[in-house]
Length: 387
Image 1 (cartoon, helix red, strand yellow):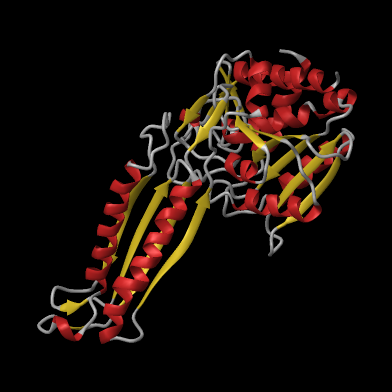
Image 2 (tube, helix red, strand yellow):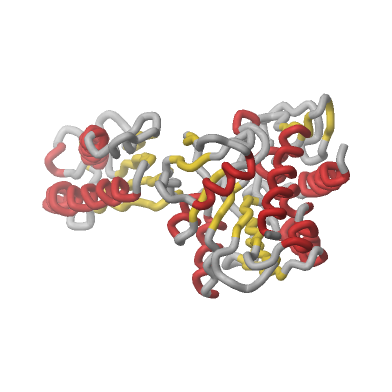
């Protein structure tokens, strides 16, 4: 085992011991990483959330200029409750060339590799800075990355390239769909089932709303970009649940729909939201309020995770293909924080060690070989920045 790999495994062992599931704080882990990066010569900023329970870390090695390269990873992990692990999920276990523990591949392995390489970067970086961006709450809506982008905007910081180290088996990923999730609440007027015209049946209006979602789902097929490489190539809509009412003979006063869409392009999301706004304001609500002036339809924002749209010109992709030796870039079905960085004006790519097939499962693992490949790539990045 090389010294760099041994040091990375040691740091990963320490990171796994921080139980940073989303419902808990990540402050101890962020403080520890900040200390490690400062020791390597980085300038470290820590941005807390509104209640001081979570924090993002943004650190820089090299000159204070625009156009830097960001190495990005999220600090949070998914829960282990009701999962049958063969070992303690928060204690790194090595067996058969695999490193087992919650977050090994998703995605503390990349964070450990990037942090371990910080002294190497500090020796070589000249004209172009390298940044470390470690965020909170990716697993529950990418809230940390959204806040981090706003922090960068407020400070006028403009990196040029973002490399998001989600587990891709070190394949270069240039695109994925977004994931927009909503809960729409309908409030009507209860009454006896024998006189439906005297009430406002929230379930029936929710059904009309679902029908509209189905119509939009068909319309989106025609909006698929030419030569789209996504599967399916168009933006999708899914109705996850419809709940409402209390009994057979009672007019339902309340109903709730949980639904999502996965846009291939931001314009599709705007198309859907604007259509639904008009449909509610012009069609559903006037009818509901003829009977009950207080009737309402309210859509609750759960999360909007922007997709990573494949771009003809993408410096991040080109750099990573050079560093990994890949002769092409792929798309993936799962979401990441990459689209948020892209929308801020950076070129972005997803590439990291481990397989997404291991993420979120019991006995999650990262192979030593994948970790070494990641270190080799980061070493070549350091050499490139030293030219």
